[in-house]
Length: 287
Image 1 (cartoon, rainbow, N blue to C red):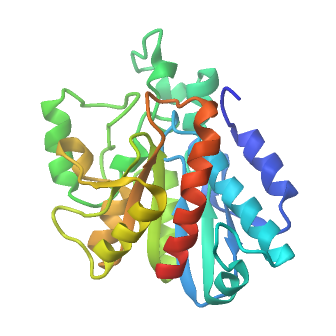
Image 2: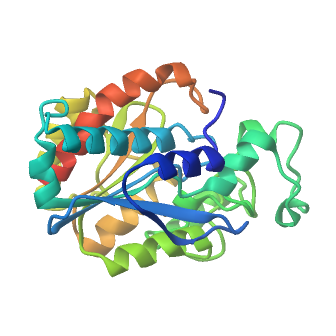
């Protein structure tokens, strides 16, 4: 598999035995789909593919849904976890692909009028992390946005481009606005944003760690064999995890799967699944 596209996602969602629904639309008008697993009072959120080259996080989240539903039906434990118990105690919200436009650009290129004014260069597909108009979604949240702008200026980033430009103001993009609105409508106790690569888990925002967050982090690291880490410089501001921690004072994690250069090879997918299915299960129990 060279990429996992928006059409692949729709095909997989149609094959699941649970309904899926849109929480909003992208710049190009694609739906941002979500599904719910479970009927418990505790609300958990797992989001994939903020970035165009990080498409491998989308089939990972879909695979989690497939295995969850399969083991719920059979009554068998999944990676040692009681899925039926989890079904009764938690509702897990899955958004596999927040940035389908970015994935399409990174995979196929674009003739988007939004990007015609940008000097993309011949190899822009190899670097494309942003959405359909050159805004990096994981720098578009209201968390240290002024500091983000200072970091961008230091790096010479002043306008829409392939990566790391956070836009003119927080939630300027329909994708980030849709996700923030979705969070505001629900009572999430824990959030995970999946990215690639590095096999690390980021857990704090500007030195602040919510209550119980570090204990949960240690458990997730043991389960996945990933190591804890802290962001630096431009990566420290404007992210979804940062926004959720600052606004809600509750645990949120950025999980970086796999090793190497984005986009990761699909050959890593089985190992990524093996490490992250139990991570998602454990996080849903502990949240």
